[in-house]
Length: 468
Image (cartoon, rainbow, N blue to C red):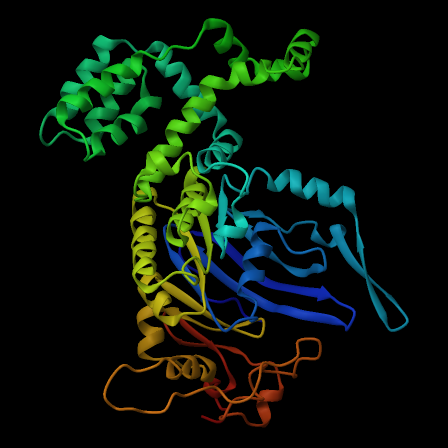
């Protein structure tokens, strides 16, 4: 199948991905030859009805496919690195008579997970659909965000600890004078901190300056107080030489002493807690300092979703996958979360794969969108062109099914028929059994047709020389 339209310098490139699930009833062909790209700083949407394969596509990118799943072919290239390389060695099928069985190579799977541990959370993070099932009910919000930071940004935490030890009150007072001047630039702050060797404190100083609940005098005092927290030399030595713990007998012995590791790492834990507060404030969490010590069940749905977003961006990923992050929220909170996504995308320069079944949400947040049906992407276009000029019959049906809030009192429209059984899907176009334009050629695999720049449709209706 032809490759769907590429963006310049794609961050993520999915090529001809095919994913199946082995069940007692047979092999479910969940994703069939899916291809798309996501550019730097772009928000790409996947839209379609429940069960079309949106979430499983995202799970394949993260290599979190359920145990019954098998990636049969394709590539998922992230900055040129193939995330599914060697997938055929991890899981494969064996046929015994009429029964298909799954065989898993645990060593290959362990090797893949070790490789993906440097990708998940650090380069690519995922915000799941229901935060109540994704957050741990036992631990506080601050603890859970801190765990992400200590796992993926350990070097940054250590740099902040070192910077506090180097910081002098006189130097920080000069910094406070700079940021108190009207019209100071971020470049000036960065240059001064670099000269003082305190670059690691830049985010914290920015956070203090951005606070609206305190005055200028208190901001200056808080900046000056950054030099008050010092780490003892022995702690700093252990933190900076932790790698020796795996090779030195003395280090291994000391780290087995109950409480020793937590004592050594307390400065880093304190930094992680401070950054967690910064992140909660960044996602516009009301009463962020209080929420830090609360548990998931004490928060509303919108607040839990903000926590999930904070955890998703904590590792400073280049790509965030958001799997229906607004589906369980009321309309007003939904609008706030969408606005938050836009702001974070612009501030952090990250790319977003946004998954939804709501065409209105897709129109609000995305730059380009891929429409999925029964495991295929049937149309890709910019948001403006898709809504103004939908081409694939399925896309037209989705848009026609959106309720119209006017005085016309037209009956609600629906797409006739049902989604095909993906154990034995129809040949050719999988939508042909529900399509009012279907004709004989539709029983063959449809071509990818370029409608215009940045607009493609997987349909025989637009193939040259075929029925229009």
